[in-house]
Image (cartoon, rainbow, N blue to C red):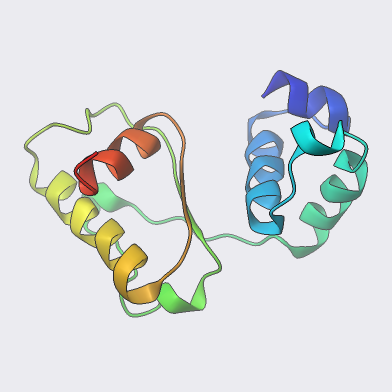
Length: 122
């Protein structure tokens, strides 16, 4: 993340995720472009990214609206992806739904990438 912020001139936790997610949605890569497009990407991210927050621990998973989102970002948690909690099982079911039925991209960070791997038997 520090290299992303350094290249884009933007700092802060939310801005880092915004830029990372924008890169995933655009299919561009700073490593491939040498960072030359990072300023333009940062500006595009500010103009076109909007997001919703869902609380998977409370069962707040948008099955009905999943196809209306461009992608899903699964972030960190104090829980382990391998906990036997009911909400973990429900989240795994939702992630499989997003991939198989809604056919939307998934990006996981920390717990997020672990739960995505767990959901897909990785």
